[in-house]
Length: 246
Length: 246
DNA sequence: CGACATCTTGATTACACTCAATTGTGGTGG
DNA sequence: CCACCACAATTGAGTGTAATCAAGATGTCG
Image (tube, rainbow over all chains, first blue to last red):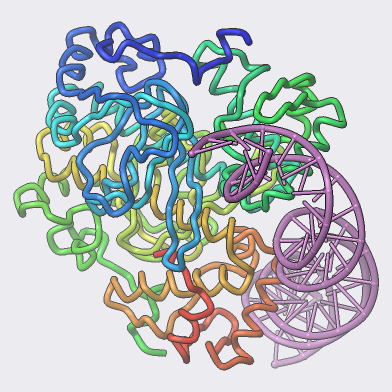
């Protein structure tokens, strides 16, 4: 198994700081001066790893921090009033979790590790204070929230207009692209989430997810062995997806 | 026609400032001191009304401002790469438009007036500067973006899990609630958007929208005459909706 | 090894889509 | 003023995609 695709086996030094983190180029610190990165670094709290199925935060919990995912993978889940669960997002290293809690001062989602993961906790009041002093950081955080908005709009479009095949292909492409941006393989990776999570996220049943993946496999678009995906024909996959949800 | 439901006939003085605006309690200035409201007011540009079908901004345009809707109604639309349109939101007075443009420095949506509307343009660089000086404003703007995120997550859940009847009922309830928050009638209002816009937004065809509305009418849940809606049985509507998308 | 969860595959059903026809509405010009 | 047209909305009939129901295969963990 090539190292480059084994993100779930990639253990970082818990003491690494932002300036040294290999994710700095895609994470919160983008476009900050080294001095400001160090200021940011000072307020970040790095806990021990969260294990698979552990919560990073619970829905309903009061909002204190946002979290940068350093390794592993996380899903966010919202529980509707009638007890159904809705998966609202999948997050990969370098991405920020928890911004849903800002509006009402408590989290509206739960964040659950899909595999052993490490997170950098960023206390929000301190981030606010620092943002007021560092214009680039304020701008960067506005941008991250805006990116979350546009990402969700793409998902809305996908759910509103596209078939099961298109939805699943788009998700595969999204993971591929995000892996590529993190310097990993765009063509080969492990899906960190279950079929059930995929179906829940994309508004499909688990049976449909399974059928579509089998179909893509039979058509030679992908190779699939459990959670191990190889994109054999990227152009064909893009043709089916027709929409990207990076 | 009662005044209180005729929001499309409500013409404001273009010179009104934030401190006097009757929407101040639900708009950007919430929780600001009067001095800070006046500072905010100084950077706001109030243009002449936009007419129905006019754009507030175009997709692709470089991002310079966000806009507070003062009167009327606006839809935001994203055009997918293959030319399809996706309605991404409906906005009523007191709500903020344009935050999608922050991530990439140009707008990813177009904002189009559904009826004659007035907007307050807020140049973003000046809002950023002011936010760095006024912590409550920074917090308030973060909250507005977060609210946009949670709102879209509710829509995602709706599209992912709910039937046509549930989607349409939820939209009616959302408009009802938002009207109520603005001091207007929760039980009687005019839909500012076409059946086609509703269908596009909710991932349904125009025929399905029409059928569901007719059905709700026959069941005595609502009274419907073109765009004029009376919610006759609010509890029944809530029962069908089972989800709110305020 | 057994118990349980996850995933795959098949047969049938249902909800919303498509296609089609009709009515209703608003705007324009003779 | 009304005839005409384009567009919006309603209603009906038939179809198709994904859901549901069901069974079996595979994988995981104590």
